[in-house]
Length: 220
Image (cartoon, rainbow, N blue to C red; front, side, top):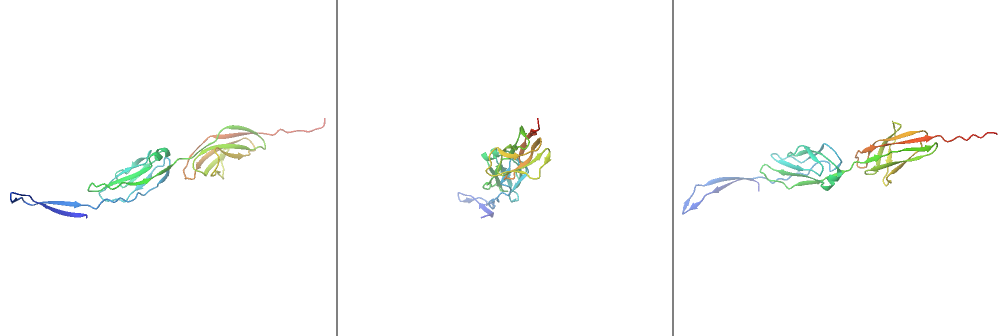
């Protein structure tokens, strides 16, 4: 039971009793740390991710974070700010943990959460190709990430209103069929995946369109 208790001590030797000594013993309530509040699914390299537990006056809080992540602010307090690293590093050690030490120096049982760090998606195109007028061509997009992917792209530097969607079950590379009427340059601008992670895009594809030959028929 928690509370403050007085202990009286005396020693009797050869029938002689020593003066009474008083000892005060304070028994504190055991530390019961709350659950951790904060995102348990994040993207690679996510920054300024905040985690917290309910604060107890006089307590100190020791945090540890998943692999590849580090604390940027708040260590030893009830709230920390975390910068994440790669998905691979976090997968090897996905545990977020806090141990509370109360004013009496008693440690709580460690409170833990498993954090999933999703890899950021990517998409790449490239190459220069020649086709004839009125022909179509399949641009190969090499991708990574959680499908479906949404890709914003430009044609000759003009952003297109309708993005490219790489659907669930798509092959890799994904083939985008186009039918340019003249020499055209396609570039990828940005993308996101089903985990709402933003990714990286690279490359451009140039398609040279040659006019079809004209057949002239006349009298000899």
